[in-house]
Image 1 (cartoon, rainbow, N blue to C red):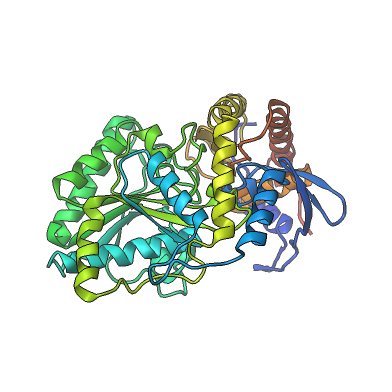
Image 2 (image 1 turned 60 degrees about the vertical axis):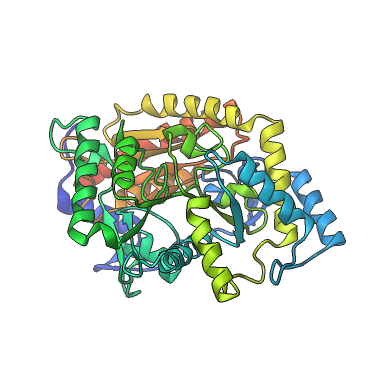
Length: 463
C-alpha cells in the first residue's frame, strides 16, 4: 500500500465520513459529555471509559481525582475563600506561591503577577512591555514578534500573538504592531537537503531581516513557546533557540518564554527553558501549575523588565492593572500543592521515562503508509498523517484525515486531538507503562482501520 488514493474519490470518502453532503458539513459530532475521571481515565455519561491522551487541554498533570488537591482547595475555601491583591493587600497562599515560583524559576526572576489564564498572562505581559517602553522614553518601541503556528491565547491581544489563521479569521486579528516570523518545523518547512542546523540558521536570518526591515528601535519583545503546542507539537531543530536568542540579544529585544504547556515537567525537565537552554526575561505559566483543577496563571519577570515599570508606577502613583480573581487564594493553594506533589513524586523524571517509552513506540509506527513524521520531547508528542509520504500531503481538505483518525481513536477509547493532520499526545504526567502501551496499541489499530477506509475504500462509491 504505497500509492496515494485517487484524490476525488478519497475526498468523497473523507467528506462522507465527516458528515459532508453536497459540499456542506452537517453537525454530526458530539458533544461527548464527560461525567467523571480517575487517574488518566475519564468516563462519559454512557459509562464508556477513555484514556485522556491530552490531559484535558495539555494540563491535568496529576490526572483526575487527586485527593490532595481537593483537600487543599477545601481547606483554603473554609479558611479564606477569597481575597484580592489590590491596594497593598495580599494573603498567605499567593505570597507563598510567588516566592516558590520565583525561587524555582529556571533563570533569575524578580516578581510574580497572577492572572487567571495563559491568555490573560500574555495580555498582561504585552501591556507591561508597552508600559516599560514608555517609561524608558522609547514610545516607538512597541512591536512584538511571535511566530507562525504559535499559540499564546485567544483574547484580542494574545490572540494576535497566536499564529494560527483560524484564530484570526473573521475576528479582525491580528492587531497592529504584532509581527510573525517563521515556524521552526524542519520536516514541513525545510528546503530539500537542508539540515536542522542550516534550517535554524536560515530562520534566525529571517528573524534578523524582519527586525531590520521594521527598525530594531521599534521592536520591544519576542514571544515563543519552547515547544509549540497547539500549532502541532513543533519541536525546535538543533541550534534553533541558541541562534534565535543571539539575534534578540544583538538588538536588545526582550524575550518571553511561554511555558503554559511546557512548564512543570512536560518536556522532561521542570521547565522547557531548561530543556532548550533558554534565558528569557519573562515567563508565563498556567495549565499544569494547578493541574487545571482551578484556573490560575502567572507572569514572571526579571529586574531588567520590572525596574523601569516600577519607576514609572511610582511617578504616576499607581500601576493601573489587575484582575479581581488574580492571585485568588483557593487556586493558589491548589497550585502550591500541585508543585509539592510533582516534586515529591519525581513526576518530572517519571514524565521523561514515560515519554521515552511513548516516543519509542510511536516511532515503530513510522513505516506505516499513513505516518509522515513522529516528533516529540519528554511527554508530549505528535504523529503527522499523510497519504503520500513523498509529497508529505494528505487528503485534499486539510485536517480531514486527522479528523477521521482522531474519531477512530475516540471510538477505541483514546481521547487525543488533531491539529490539522497532526495527532497530538500529551497525557497526564502520572501515566503508567501499561497505559502508554494501551495508547500505542490503539494507535496501531486505528492506523490500520483508517488505512483500509482511505486506501481500500477509495475505489468504492459513497452514497
